[in-house]
Amino acid sequence: MGEPLLQVQNLCVEFQRHAIRAVDQVDLSVAAGETVGLVGESGSGKSTLARAIARLVPVAAGRIVFQGQDLLRLSPSQLRPWRRHVQLVFQDPLASLNPRMTVGDALQEPLKIFRPDMPPNERRAAVSLMLTRVGLQAGAAHRYPREFSGGQCQRIGIARAMIIKPALLICDEPVSSLDVSIQGQIVNLLLDMQRETHAAMIFIGHNLGIVRHVSHRVYVIYRGRIVEHAPCEELFLRPRHPYTRALIASIPQIPPVAVAVEPAVIETPHRTGGIRGCAFRDRCPHAREPCAAAAPALAPAAAGHWVACLRAGEI
Ligand SMILES: Nc1ncnc2c1ncn2[C@@H]1O[C@H](COP(=O)(O)OP(=O)(O)O)[C@@H](O)[C@H]1O
Ligand SMILES: [Mg+2]
Image (cartoon, rainbow, N blue to C red):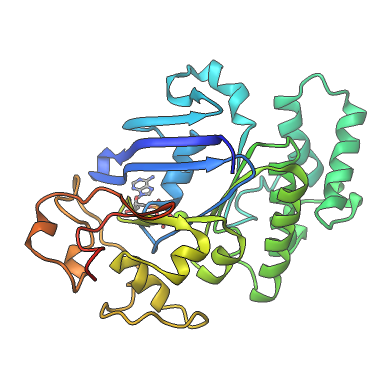
């Protein structure tokens, strides 16, 4: 992989009214054309991190360097042209589409914003082409989102995100709300589109099998902190962090790793302020006194493999 397209450094996002630090000192990088998986249980901060990178939520601290430019230092008007380069695909495809807008208008909108010079007939042609590209009929342009199934709505969401050829596509659980029978088609569509456009992708998912299938590298997030990241197969075959091991052990299709951790619970409890020490220590069978003193930093464990666990070397 080449130069980083995106470098997130020490990123913190807080919801002050709720006294929650949802993203805590996150470092993450994405190379051009790379697919980075992001996994962690519900409430761990995945969507907030995605929305922060897309500049949809305010950031408390850190840097978001995209193509060499720190997006957090740009004024709103300077930021506008950058927005086209980072597009999001959401979990609930119907909710992310305006019910009063035809599909054609929804797809034309980003072109109007980011390519205002494009003549209307070219814009309509681009929309028809895009609709057929994602497996819908060009006539879909005249219909409304509610007339489509969940899978078709997600195709529309992907079309809208890709029509302005972003350099980075962030997919936030793009198939979680879809029928299992359709999930594969949508994942394959995303991979095809990515191959054609060379876009980089951040793929958030809690189906680890799908994340493993699509990702080059994978980050594991727990209570807002990255606890481990590694090349995809390295992470799934040799997970080092007790939390990653527990996550992987709870998927049936991958041979379970022997670990003495209870299966991941569904919702991380809310907390106030930052956490002292390792965030996982209260659930970790390997926790010792030093784990309570300070949050362990990510340290290299193998080539490209980083783990934030004081005991990673011994367990
Ligand atoms: N708009 C918000 N206001 C207050 N708290 C929020 C908001 N969005 C998310 N949170 C909280 O931030 C934490 C991370 O949430 P989220 O990023 O949605 O996690 P995930 O996508 O991993 O399930 C949770 O504790 C959640 O309740
Ligand atoms: Mg989420």
